[in-house]
Length: 317
Image: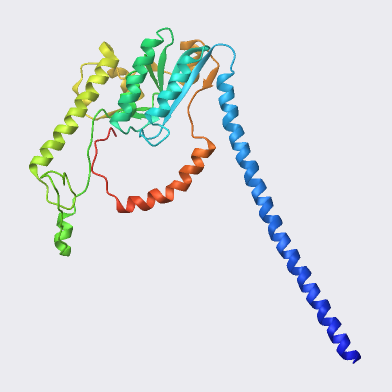
């Protein structure tokens, strides 16, 4: 009888001990979860505070300053170098009562001719609206194609001797898989309404009429590019046909051709040209919420790109 009582007590104690351990493990897991959640929350607040502090610095600055707007990377409608972002930043820079001059610092290989044209148009509008505020471009590593389309609207263009400038041309590229399909015995079945709806389809034989039309398209955009550069640079541009051939030059070579005006960095232009050494950054960058949304949407976009093949488009790159 005593043995039975002792066994029952032992089992009860073991069950209580197991229950206590299980409860401790559960509490520990929840503790870790809430700590991680707290860290994530504090990190989000910190990043948002950094975004707000940057905006406060721009709005609350005292004294005359040089306003900076940065254009980095490929110029397209969905990135940080979109016309919406660049134009909004330029507008804020010009409207600030303490802005003595504006510098658009460019480091871009080019991109969309439409987005580049929209920025060029807005730069011209702002220069006309604020005639007492100069708008200069400072080129860092590269300012090619669509990047130079934008730069041509500035009062002056400053470069480094090793900067790469030019590539005034237009391209429309793609691939052809007809030969590979024939070797593999693959048949292309394309049904369209409209004889040219499969324009430059990479899986169909090339048609001379479509190639001719594509050349007309890129030539028309190229002529628009040439007109913009001639209008922006005026008589500073040398009479040299190679300027519009798509070639690229160093900063030193661009000065000889009239594609740029002088050597100079951001600090030099602010201090010696605009005469306002203090630089305030008005660049419109992605905030925390936008960065999170973009990361969430990146997976869906990558999956969709595997199924969708957009038609070839003209590019200033």
